[in-house]
Structures are given as C-alpha cells and as structure tokens.
Length: 216
Image 1 (cartoon, helix red, strand yellow):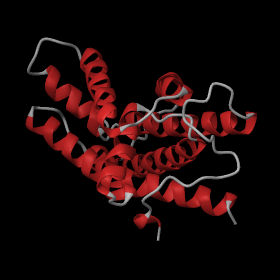
Image 2 (cartoon, one colour):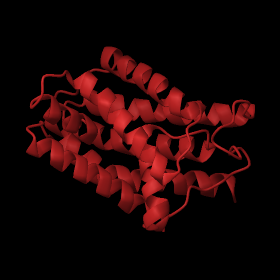
Image 3 (cartoon, rainbow, N blue to C red):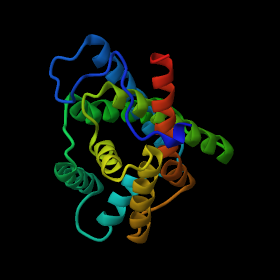
Image 4 (tube, rainbow, N blue to C red):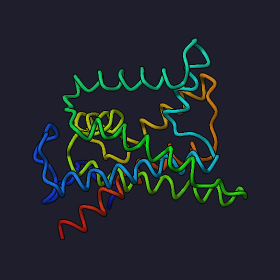
C-alpha cells in the first residue's frame, strides 16, 4: 500500500549519492522530468484560483505581521528550512538548485498560458489534478536522488528520524504550516486544503508508481 511507504525507492537510474556533479544522463533526465511535473502542478494550482499552497499561505501570514514582502519571507523560510537540514543530516545536490529554477519557470508558463476555468467545479477539478501532478513529479525527482528541494529534504529528514510513513510526515508538515499561516492571517482556499491534505498521499503514490514501473 503506497500510504505506508517509508523510504525513497531506488531504481537503476537513481544516483548513488545526492552530491553527484556528474550523474548519468538518464538520472539527470528523470530529475528534470520530475521537477517539470512538480512545477507544472504548482503552477496549475495557482491558475485554478482555489488558493495558494500551504507554504505560500505561511509566507503571506508572516508578511502581514512584519514589514517584508511575501517573496522575501519565502526566501527566509527556505533558508530556515535548509538550516534544519543540518541536524537531520540531509545533503544538497544539483537537484536542490534545479528545484528552484525549473519550478519557477513552470509556474510562470502556467500563469501566462493556462487559462483559469470559469466554473467552481472546473477550478476544483484543476486543483485536484494539480496536487496529483505535483505528487507524481515529486516521486520521480526524489527517486533520482540528486538532492531534494528545501521542503522535500525536511520531509525526508523527519521521516528518517521518526520512521513514520512519508505520506504522514508530508501531511503533518503541510497541515502544520497552513494552520500557522491561517492563524497569522494568510488566505486559505479549497485548493490550499486539497494540497495540504493531498500532497503527502500524492507524493507517496508517485514514489509507488515509479518504483513499480522500474523495479518490476
């Protein structure tokens, strides 16, 4: 059952270590595919107009209480999350850098070229597709093992310490963050809740599917 997955699976194209500056072409290719899907999902969530992701709500909530922009707060939060990597013994890689670059590009593409659905039902359906797409992309790029993004690295580190399933750890993180953001005044929509409660199972499903396809 994919909800019980506790470890990131390995395939024949997974890197042996995150800090690998000369990965196999297949490893790098799957990393880019995974990050592209991840960014596409994030972008579709924004386009759906059903609410921002939990971490964006968190940044918005903080920005309402101190005199900094949401972008600046997001940067500070990312730095803070990376600092938490140290006691959790997580290691960065080229995927950590590409995470920010590719996802940012995909979000811009979605915003500029994907129209927002007119009906509430269509917007909600798009939000569901967005969460599933993000999870599939997360599964692919995490299995590449070339370094996770700040939040995914925190998820992996906490999973290794707690030994809880990845779906449960990710859900705990997202729900905690969105709760804090909402308390601080951040705006929460149906898409935010779908992401908070659905991203953990979606990432676990992505890991399960990739593992099943390449290891069977």
